[in-house]
Image (cartoon, rainbow, N blue to C red; front, side, top):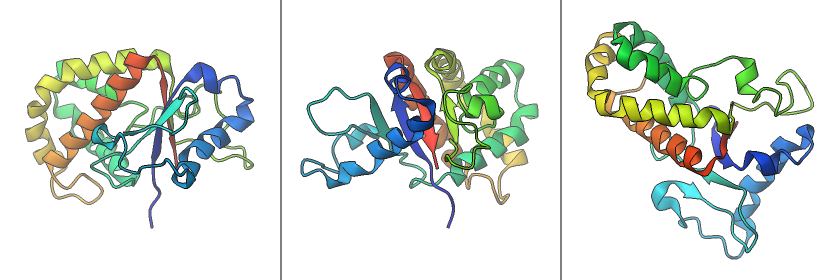
Length: 203
C-alpha cells in the first residue's frame, strides 16, 4: 500500500500563530474529525474538489481532494518524474515557467522548500511527521502566473511525453492523465494565490 497525499490550502498567518511543533497536528486535527460531525456531508463543496470544515467559525484551511489520483501520492511523483524526463525536449519558453510551476509541488525543490523554510518542524525530527510539500503564500502568485503562461501550450508537451514517458513504469499512464493532474494543480495554485493562502501536503 502506497503513501497518500492530503493537501490543504491554509491561512499561513493563522497557522503561524501556533508553535512550530504543533502545526502539523493542527492540520491533522482539521483533516479527520470532520467525518464525525453530524453536519458533515462528504459531498459538500466537492464539485470543485475543496472540502471546507463545518461550523460557524471562519475557516482557516480547506482540504483538496484530487479527482485524478484517489488520494495517492504516487501519481504526483510520477508526474514529476515525467517532467524531469521530457523537459530537455521542451522549448525554453515553456520549460522555464513549467519548472516554476512544478517545483515544490510535484518536483522536489529541496528540504528548505519542503519544510516551508522552517515553518514546520525539520524533517529529521523523529518526534514529528514530515510534510510532503509546503508552499508558502508568497510563492503562489508566481506559480499561478507560470501556470497561466503554460496552460495554453500544454499540447506542445504531447510529443516529448510520447518520446520519453509513454509506456514506462513510474510515469503517468497516458498523456491525458498527466495533463489532467497538471490542470488540477493549476486550479489549486490559482485558488490559493487568489486567497493569499499557502499549500501544505501531508502523508
